[in-house]
Amino acid sequence: MRVLVIEDDPILSHHLATQLSELGNQVQVADTAKEGFYQATNYPIDIAIVDLGLPDQDGISLIKSIREFGSKFPILILTARVNWQDKVEGLNAGADDYLVKPFQKEELVARLDALVRRSAGFVKPIIRSGQLELDLAAKQVSLAGEAITVTAFEYLILEYLMRHYQEVVAKQRLLDVVYADKEGDPNTIEVMVSRLRKKLTQAGFADSILTIRGQGYKFNQICE
Ligand code: CA
Image (cartoon, rainbow, N blue to C red; front, side, top):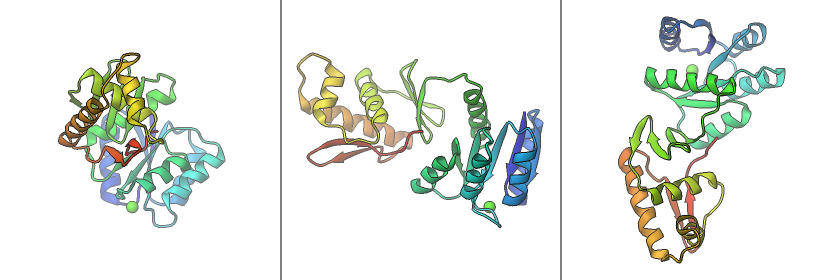
């Protein structure tokens, strides 16, 4: 496929171009937003990798311009910024995914593949928040590709919280989710949430589930 890399760091952009070419892609490189926009709108690009910190324009405005122009290929953001506001802003501007620098080549390739698959219509039933993935078909949880072992109840809780990440979910609601029509003890929810939190933290995903005092729980990341 034809990959457009818009990145001003010459070493990184050279690495990306080499690695992606070795995998059989045709790679085009631009080191400014202006050049990137030109290439994005004048070539049949399959996917673009866009750095947010470009010398002449912010990557986010560049993505907006590309989308306003009407280009629909998937865009992966590369960013050294780690705060979630930037990621949300990027996704809102029209990017499809993001990767925080420094990153592993394997992860980049996996994300590019997934983006291309998705844009081609082969949608895998996955809910994702950053590197945390919930495979809805297999009922499995993984972080950056590494499986996290959770119980069936913990899985149900996590899936529900991730699906409703914009809401504070009451304990009673989780009780209904876990026990369906059976009578359950609200304390068991607390135990399950705390175990789930611990497992996610151990796997490297801290502060995943917030406790909102007197109201319930809230999943602490943004899903696409
Ligand atoms: Ca940069």
